[in-house]
Length: 532
Image (cartoon, rainbow, N blue to C red):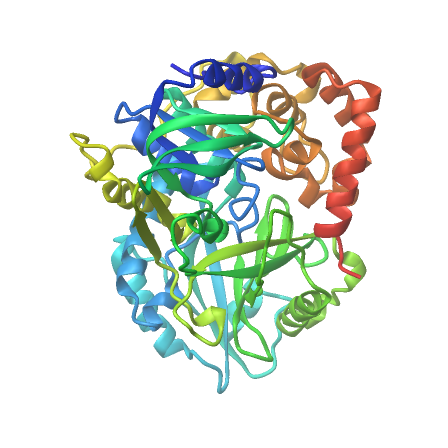
């Protein structure tokens, strides 16, 4: 086994081991620690392959912590004729809800129907009939006007006919990535953040390894590999550019805003058609807040830095929320935070990024296999497709779909677990899986309280600081926990308590803490607050 945990100090020890054993060859080096890279590592490691996963930023830093948080079947893809993507997505959604309750959970959706609006109730329910057929169960139900108004007291009633209820699923995307990476670790994969592929090592135009660069120190490490898998998503053309001049990826930005649930209370998700361009916008409950999103805009050159929502996007989302829920009287000052992520669309030349297909594409370039596109929901199937594309470099390995569970099923035995209310038991088990008992064993009784304004326990914050490869404060507040999205000032309203945990578990001095707070505030004010 290469790395059993991410406890403080393990990252440096693993890097030292790799450097001291430079002649050893890895079966696979995966560039990219988002959900695609995590899924590839999980499926490869469980087959006994020697796998190294690196990311030049933090795990899930790019797209996989800044999605719309939905594990959905892609209802709109039916309307565009992409039945295959919908069928696979619905099947994987049902699998994830079954395997990881508390992390991937069913979410009710409502869509209001208005006189003259499209799609009307008849057409929409035909689409849902197909959707439910793929799921093997009926979720859809039409509500007449009076019933729908009862479910949605703040809804826009002008020309309202009623509404349709259906179902998809919701998740914490970055926690999903961490759980999948932990499964890969369990089967022997080595996983390191803030280490990127600086360049490819080639011999006779064949990729035989990579030059790694430690983002924290600048150190370079040469690593041999049978195959390199480029799972950097929207950044995929950058590494693939060392092998070809082709450019296939179209980065598209999707932005969201977060408001207090009491300012826009929704018990289920709403699919609202934007009054200007008729694009569907989601307004949904998440982690005790209400989220409004998303946009879909070309982002151009994304570089190695965070993206942020524009002022135009903010106004666009506020218009959608105000149109759908005029009685709420939502104002800009209600916004707690925002986030923007970049989707890796594979370009077909469509004028509008919303018209691009969401299925994935794979390119095989002489030892470098690149994957881009696809949906969060189908990450397991994408991983298997990528590994099948890499078969020529990994002979005698069976990459067919065995149907094996993605997650190790674990029933916590801790006495503290049994003392928690049911909803917290479900959360801890879903978010932390096989680590649930250790999390509770390392917790303090006073930290089994929910953090005000969030759904997480203080014990989760301590666990993540100690055990989940925290290098910077933004790793802890934006990705391991979501306090940076859910709380005012990016969570620093609880600065003293967070500081005490980081000082104890990460060994941060006063000087280091101040450096991290300065870095974090710069990131949060630029990319997660209200754009000016």
